[in-house]
Amino acid sequence: MKKAIILLLLMFILISLRADITVKFKGSPDKLMLQVSKIDDIDYFKLRELTNIFGGSYREELNDDKLRLSLYKKHLYFMLESSYVNFRTDYYSYIYNLKCVDGHYYLPTTFLEIVAPLIFKKEIRYDAKRNLILAEIPDDDAIRTIVLDAGHGGKDPGAVGYSKKNQEKDITLTLVKQLKKMLEDNLDVQVLLTRSKDEYVHLRKRTKFANQQHADMFISIHLNSAKNKKATGIEVYYLSTAKTDEARAVEQMENSVVFKYEGGEEAIKEYDSLDFLLADISMTEQLAESSDLANKLQTNLITATRTEDRGVKQAGFYVLKGAYMPSVLIEVGFISNKTEEKQLADKKHQKKIVKAIFYGIKSFKYQVDNI
Ligand SMILES: [Zn+2]
Image 1 (cartoon, helix red, strand yellow):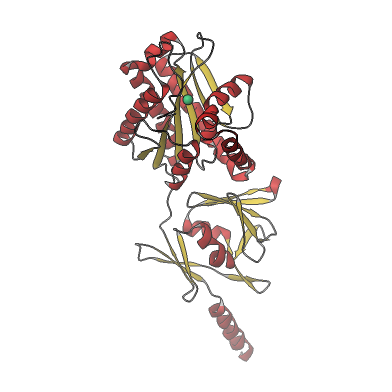
Image 2 (tube, protein in one colour):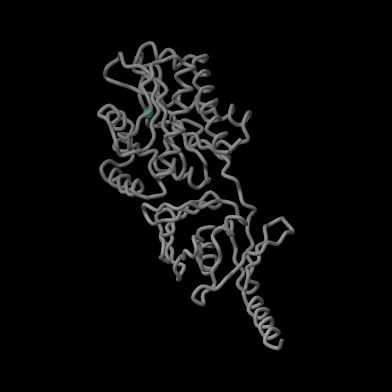
């Protein structure tokens, strides 16, 4: 009897010693508890409990011995049996190893104390004294902010029309302004422009702006041009290192801006140093999303305009490098072709293009938003 009481007492002490973490969400009176348990005398919590409380999800990527955690729209990669987590291009240590016990993943509480506030600066605050996490209400993955980029501008006219009357920079700006209005009038989104007047904006500043604004999508609009004046049609690009000769030619044309207007070789070297981003594991998923978005846009554009389908392609555009969100570049037609130049300058045709891009974005958004 005595033994039983002592045992009960011991259990009670052990339970009360276990320092579960209180989670409070801003603007909500509710308190949730994240259970903490000891493994090798270190405080751990179950990853499943974390995603239950904060939303988000995780999945094993066993080919790479990695665990991918998505939280507040950010993707973190944990290495199994290691104390490091990769986010974008940085690695963070949370001191003790990630553990797998009976098929459940456990993270040490040091992850919440040390690393989480660095990665989730705005979303998670840890109060060590009160053993409390104060967090933003988890956001869904909905697409809310879209950045539209009108190609070229200012000193850089882009491609010049067959008739020499029209310039790429003017038509792209017109299209982007119309698209912004249509998106904001019909979808629950905020649309930001990299330029809203005839000015030159450095290519890198365009994606930097999108990153700073936490955009969920980046769309750059251009007009195509070729030496062969017979060339026609629409193509949508997303970022890649893989190329065909034709894609390389378009890439060269669009990238030549850097050489001409941004200080030549030195600037190109700087942009090329961004190539490492392509090797970053978190890019893989983004590329899949970009490819999906590109396909939706291409299908809609071809159906609406009935112009030649040049397909979805991959190329290494500087303007897309460094964007941390699904991003595509659309060539909406050939300004170097006599007939297409006329169409591209025509208000009715412009409306068709804008509508088609709008529907492409809408269907991508609904898919991502799970509507
Ligand atoms: Zn262009």
